[in-house]
Length: 146
Image (tube, rainbow, N blue to C red; front, side, top):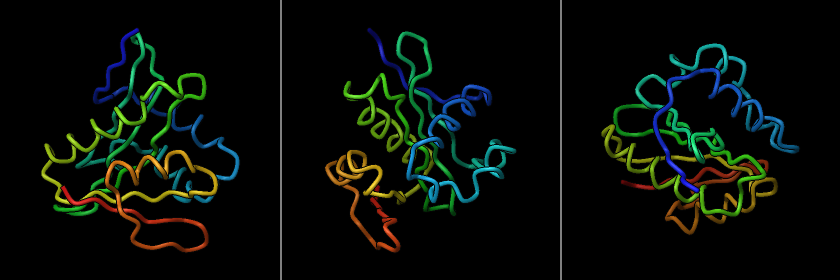
């Protein structure tokens, strides 16, 4: 079984993973600008990128990097299809994303998450070195310097 993370330019693959991710019950507040994002992925992630994780060439995971300014980016849309969870793919996706952020010249990565819905992801972000900056209405802003 092989797992590979790489930049994805196929908007249909990205949209499929993002749509599946958007169906997570309780995560609705994480998708405020979702229609705008889905309608123009190239523009939305200009200066950043979307990475897709493939198990045996099948797209099963994603994470996106959105440029905020020349120094700061936001990591978004970390998603592993449910049947592929528990294999360490989220950690690999985050590691590759952090490497890509450095390669793109960013000095800080932010992440917004909802621990009540995404507790496993939230704990992983903390273990990987993200620090909690603020919390409002159950949504936590995290950051990591590169």
